[in-house]
Image (tube, rainbow over all chains, first blue to last red; front, side, top):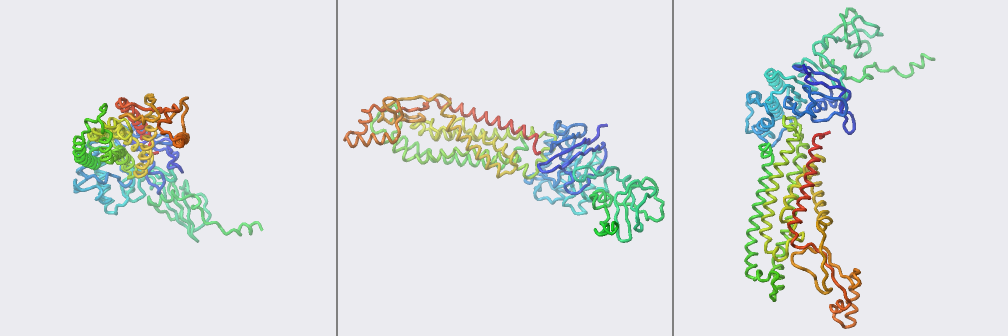
Length: 299
Length: 315
């Protein structure tokens, strides 16, 4: 089956800097993927490239097997909720729906009505709250019955209650349309709640990707007294180490059970895991000893 | 797309219609006064080739009385620019400024089709509106056109086919400016500058050469003016055909006065002549077709460029 999204060495250069660089990523159909990363990590750039709003500087991107810029007909199958859900503010909710209905060949009025719920058709879009506008934007893209749904920071400006409600509407809609979903967000808790897979972008490239479950399963936090670190059985790679005066905390990628009793082993949360992979390498090192120490050694 | 265009541009259409109605009311109101005066003063008897005595006075009086109205109508030459400023420039600039293009251009309708249908519909509306303005002006200016002709820019620019052509050109320039500048106010400013410059260049350098101008040689003392012609140049030459500078002309008149000769007779005695270069009144429609065609061609080129660029925008 053609992947829902297939990026090959994809790069996008803006005037000053690269927004995305050397991004290779395959998202199979039916997946629900969280696109995590700090601001300016390239999340929006990747989604805009997938929606055919930007042209790649290098590499290629295929959406449902098509180049979204050269074969824009594929956009009939792609639903894109841009950041901040920009809709015509002078339109009423009803007019916005009519706009989407008239610009798409397929239209499912039932699903639109169910997502909109109590939102009045005569209300002006400009008068809606951020949560209501996002809800409307979601209704509009679900009305297309998309095969791929791209959401850029849909939780921005939403309080935790509204986030939950939005997620519920989203998941109902996804269940109805069986669309592939890519949610870009820096709200990890929400991503963890709904996404099966996660892609971590940082500095314009993919830092980590995999199934949420197996990532959480394969990483462990080890805590123990401070000491030189040798090889630890069951640890394949140390992702991050942190020292305090006496304590040593490691985040490790494990490849077997860690049985050494001198370590306290804990499971890791998704947010902590992602933050560990985001931290730039130099900050992973312990604080440097004062400068005179090496002199003493030589002395 | 017709529905979409209608929803987004209703306000502009209403304002445009309001403007048309106001213009029509003003035209009907003033035209009544003018046509009354036209008949009352017996101007129809003074039309060329009539040589009725006193006609020059009657015509001068009529022109003095209503000349300011006619020059106000000349100001309607700015109307086509409004299509560029208020319809063309915001078309893409507003979408890019507010980010709504990200919503509009990710629907199944491709952005090229979106742009072409919207521009085509708005251009059609613009042509109709500008055509009505042009027809209204032609009807209103009829007494003036019979007296003075309509080849001169003051009439040519606000009558006939060129008015819709200018408006469509302004519209397409506005759309392109919006795409390139991505800010409504900046796009409006650029549209005004480009439109005015293009009009000026065409008027000054191209229109006089659409067809080779005709020349007429008259006595130095005659004005050489003939009703309806667009005079391009009016130069005094000596018997050898060399051009005479203003200083030399003043000097000659001074000589005549010192010698106690009538300056007019003196200039004729010297054998000086006046060469008038002009575009005759009968070329009005030919020139209208040329100039309208030129602006339609320019609009098409601008539109092709815009459609080509919109695929690559925003980069």
